[in-house]
Length: 218
Length: 218
DNA sequence: GTCCGTCTCCCCCGTGCGGGGGAGGGCCGT
DNA sequence: ACGGCCCTCCCCCGCACGGGGGAGACGGAC
Image 1 (cartoon, rainbow over the protein chains, first blue to last red):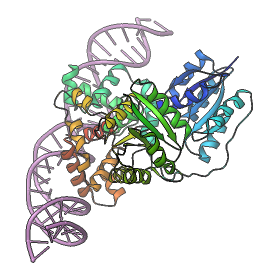
Image 2: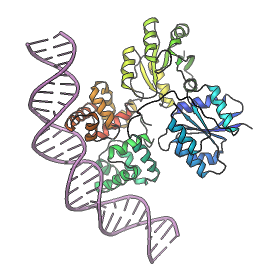
Image 3: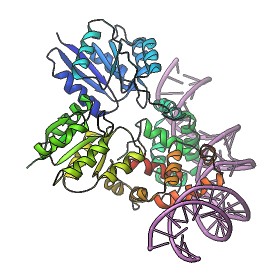
Image 4: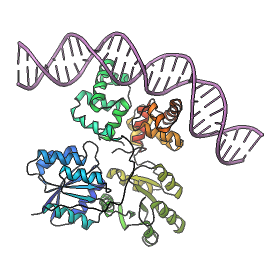
């Protein structure tokens, strides 16, 4: 029976590439895709893949956290193959500590990608050494709004609605008019949203909304 | 007759992804691939593609140089669609100066990628990955942020820098500290940005930044 | 029944924000 | 040399925003 793989990457292009590469193999089958780590656990429970190809950087829940979550909550967990664009020792170390079984660069050749999947599926570990690229900076504390956005699931319906309106650039008064409530009510909801997202002001909340995929550009 | 495309990217995975996305369209045909800018010129001469999807960073010859080389040496050159992973103004301006016809983020959704190829093939330019018309339709009150976002080209360097900081959720005081200028100077730039983008407040400006592709989620 | 979460509305209050002005110096093209 | 653009900094001023409280009504959960 074939090796079943679940693809987890926020970029559809990368998912399409991995799917094209892996499905060219008769003994490998891509059984599902996810765009964020937050969606992984239920998918793993339902699809029971042999291998999860897990991206590191994702909006709602990153690959490291998702790896921990899967291994902690799912009995008889799949092998985790962490996929990333460039080598980063911190990520490597963190991923291994989280329980990942392998490490793979996106710039690897198709044969290497296939090989990695087969290897971890067979129970072996795979680690790519040779750290060449060091993408410095990736400036500052930009991770704060995104990580705080993890709380998005805990937004109430009304708060989510208010956040959607905020993300359209509406003022409190405009939101109040649109939702047919008082401005004070909107203020309450906005404050709750800011608190739950860990945002300091509405701008940071809107940024979190975009970064987490809660609203989409275009 | 279909739009013919030549893929130029050093990562096979990305090429596979682009091929999968583009060949799903009946009117688009991928006629060739290259792993480096250095291989582009002879391929363009032989294959005569309508569009070249050109990666920016490649080992032997980068996308900017390759674009210059193609446009300089090939008569009746193809349209150049520069593909990049993240937004970088230097690359944008350099590529435009080199004669590129459009830009495309690898993070873009498949529909956007297809749209970009069709657009440049038709002779239009595509400065922003995201379609702006849908925005105008969505903002019933005239699409202020969206349409105004087109004026991004007219933002001065300093204003663009300030907008980037705004899009990271920083306050005026924080931006001032980071750029080592006074808060009043930042306020001046912010006001200029708001005016040029047609935004009422910084939140709307940040929304415009996301919607126009000036900043990239994730 | 009681508790708890949600939605709704209200008060005060400080301040960051943005509008509308102005002004000086530097660089560049003509 | 001059005008024009950019960057820098400053003033006043109104107000929307956000924090920190509280409170009543409804519903489901226990």
